[in-house]
Length: 196
Image (cartoon, rainbow, N blue to C red; front, side):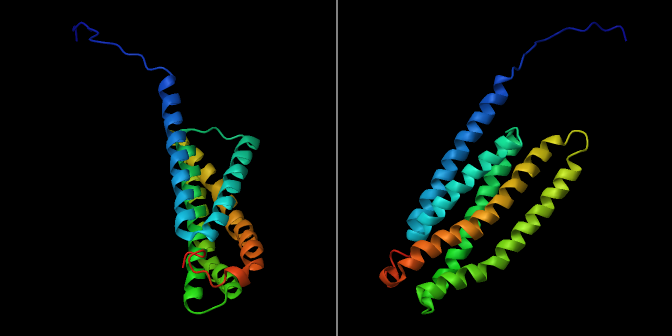
């Protein structure tokens, strides 16, 4: 059709838009993690402090793995990391709530520690296995055209879930057994310090 093409306006979008989005996401994630660490400390007190130490170690190991692979931190990848951080916190909350139930039922602190980790393990294991299966599905279907951003999300989430299982089950358990187990006679009756 003999209709002339008239350019109404033009716009250029530079790479700085993506940089600003990533910087904003990292800042929001840092604030979110800081709020979670503060919540764990205030609500669970001594166990929360030990969980905070494990979560800081979790974040450091995650960053080290991201640098070793290397992982490009796109917006979906940052989202996967933050979601896996939430799952790491969730595992600690499950353990500490089980411990509090045992303490309220009259168990000693040593028994509550052992039973809390033992009873929470099945929930932690099942939720993490389900998440890893979802990551595998997302990775597989993310190979199709136009969905490659999903692969970054799936990769960082899977890495984070694997590391969170290690930190929640091994690191937090070691911290709790070492600190609270060795001080069980002194702090066993302090319900405030245990967050009960």
